[in-house]
Length: 579
Image (tube, rainbow, N blue to C red):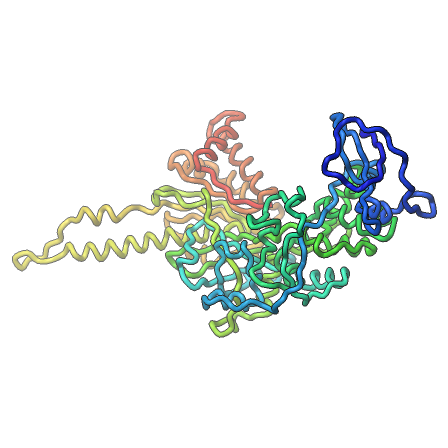
């Protein structure tokens, strides 16, 4: 519990921490018709708006220490409990002196800058980003697959050195927020989206603790994602730089409350931002996936300054997708497969994934036949190497791959890479072997060549588990996989959850083939790769594997988990999962 002693004075940096003498009560702040202080009046009292002074309070916290806070904050804490700190201005949006900066001298980066599908240049975008062209796209699902829509996009980079990917790696894509949502936010705040500005730190930002957070540039208080290399429009800032759709932090909710003109709305927002409002926040904000626009529409009297919103909103993160290709086959092109993410909240509101819907809208507006070097759609991408999720160094080592849905994407690259490597070895073997055939004294002779035998290294066998709903509607890469399957080199096991009376998933197929799976893992020392949904599928697969090891493998009750844990440490059980 804190004990408050009121003083009315301008803030001083040399506040004493000794026990103060209680001061006379200050003049009352404006109240509403029911006698309580209005949120707007409390805010003004706390930040000194209109008075030139900041009314301060000396408080004693739970540790017994005395500190100085604004009276507005103290009153709010008395009423609502613990709240996030107020957001203080550390940035300024300065009107641009010139319309734009000259285009970069490099032709490719110049093309990137002029593309409507690439973000403005910032310090962040200069780190590893390269321009890539959308060269092709197709649907991997049929219309009969219902709400499940999977799209494959092919991106072409200008030079393999710009994107030296390997099987198992990912591509990072800088995406845009929904344009309609951005325009609605600008209209709601009364902002001119075409206004061009530069972002600069305020004069007192160096002394403000709120600047000492991750993501700040070394040059000052401007975060890297807002450190533009040229003037930028306010609309582009909201489109490309900040996350407007993720669940807001409570500091944002507090900011909206601070700038409410309606008492009831301010009260509701302060409640949401407080510790006391945790249950309500989980149900109404997190449960309904409310973003910035949802909150602004739900509380129309809140009108925070755009500068403070830009400060408090997190950076719009790039999205990562597994590469479904091999550099041995397509050195300057990479393919990705993604589900177009849409869902409906309990309250009936439709929500969309940011990047997947953005990419899908680009594809829908550009038929594959129109994509060419003349009609270039340039995106900002970068290479994200896999840390552990990569093929074994020994190409002869067997691998087991479990990838239902879009989790199959990296395994398509694995299979293509190994089969192409085998073809190259065979071709090289054929060329070298022909050099060992000739004539000696007019007689045909074939000489053994140790180099040939060394080059004839075996490519390890591969086993892929793939699952989907219906083989006729969402069997991703069906033709490619069925073409690759054959002989004893590649084994394909499928599971279809919407065919037949019972739902069959990949873990059920593992159980059915337990003996052979155990032979691969225990006798042949195969590496197991798992890719896809981490919320359910990955847990179910691991649980089934532990059961198989205990029941079929004779490892004993409770020892399956310990063995899989050891495999994780050894790099024998590798995951690339998401939720």
